[in-house]
Length: 510
Image (cartoon, rainbow, N blue to C red; front, top):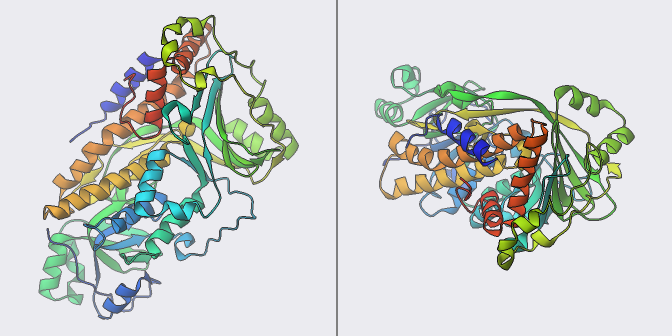
């Protein structure tokens, strides 16, 4: 197992790991009909007609990661004075998405790590999450279909209260939006799409007729020009691509990617069971992992990876048939339950008995029986993509625009939040030093910080995905031994928990 991880890490690191004035004018294009969402300060400032809007930062993509970046910028003394444009056509940014506690949970959820929670608390956003439905979990059980590989993790193994928290994406997004709205952060939300982006001076001459020569020279020399879907343009000193796996910013800026599509889909849904769930369950099956994640009350979320043919079939079968398949996949289906030890595995690791963990003494548990389907079943194709570079002059990528990963460990959004937090700090450092925030040398510091961490996680997830695509007796035993080692070697277990929690850059086994 370790050799698989090391090989994957070396393959991913072959993907090229590298290493003052602000746009402050506020202007408008004649005839603009953009339905802008402005705070009170901007409403007072934006009284000038016949001009073009200029911003310090344009965040293209107002999803969870883009809004996280805006929240982090709004909470830092060095960056909260920046003017920021957020470009996204999603109706969620207009406040039209309602969250009702009496409704069943939405099937689109995220498992956020303690590190992500800490970032959101620092920004003042986590309190809004806690006002809505969410579920902390303090235990995790991972096992495989052979009945050999098995491990349990407990928050008390690392003296923590919880291992993570599951929340609906709309709850996380709404919390970040509320955080920004309750601040005096200067932001403008454009409910539009990005059509084109110009990063060089020569092609910006088309706007000169609307600007004085001094304004034109300043905007062209210091800012990128973004043309929006209503035909109007804005300028920004730094453009942040937070627009997902099919990033328009990444495409327009010419960033190349490396990756592939998996021959797998993920089927997700909300389910109900008789009692509250406080554990995250994950079982590795021959066609891919199935996870049961607590979401609050008597609800949990299913994330089940399988072939496209299977996912299409299971999306269309009856609720009764689907629940039968889910319960089988989480219980005796495909193979037996694990025993507490594998051929004396506990004895093999007995020399660690003086430093045992709480979860090492916990027995295998059967997940709660699913009794009801509480949402529609949704199917998503899976892929791995990684941008060869995250930054160039005036443009930087974060979140899925820079990297997409397999969902088997629920780490995708946490990597994106890590990107947003890192970039906000780098921007603050640049301002403190009087550096142009769009300078490539500054942005490369962000890339050098985040790229190794993202590639490392991608390599580990890819290793697990590959390891469980092989069903061969001797290899199954080796794979199970690695599981049991992670269960019974306390230093290794604590390192794995810390790494998965976002508190440690690299697990000890690397």
